[in-house]
Length: 253
Image 1 (tube, rainbow, N blue to C red):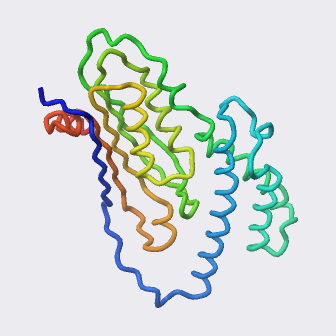
Image 2: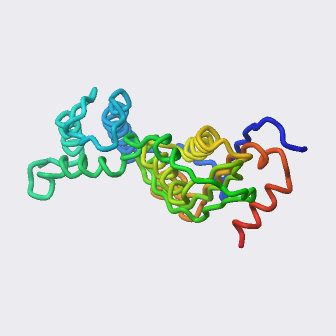
Image 3: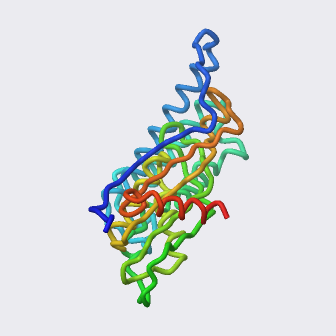
């Protein structure tokens, strides 16, 4: 048999290679942007990373959770950032913005309250099926941890079961779990594959993701159509070229 102990492969490609961007045009506007993004990243990191130290209960309300950074502190941080941009942070349009931002984060970053073992623990008898199980074109939305810019795209998730299969909606949920956090695309890709391997113990699993990144569209190189692709292959998908080819053909069809 050609199966060997599962290993992992991790590749990253960018459809459009960024041009070298000089700093000769860097002025007050760029310095302002860098400072603002740094402040926003710090505020978000304090709020979201504080959630990692609490008990993981996806049914718990954010208000009832004990966090390193409290909800009120997070709202004050948002108001401080607004004051960096606006002279009047108490005008009608901005008065409730700190609350709205923090409320939206409870949904945008809901992945911190999700547990992969709960998602992937409900399995069924595979009844002897030993082919590829593929759920492709899973839409996802995430947030870049470097600039707090959104990035979104599609994920293709596949595995070859040994005895047990998982409901297809769970494959979408595990993508959501990893995407709804402060992330980078590489970590999402690897994290999904690791969870599939750990909890399903398949013959092999594969994750391929394609996404467009806001941090490249609205700043820096300003590439509007660049697509970043990442992949993680484990088990038979790593070891056997025929298995990979069959997977790629299924995704293409």
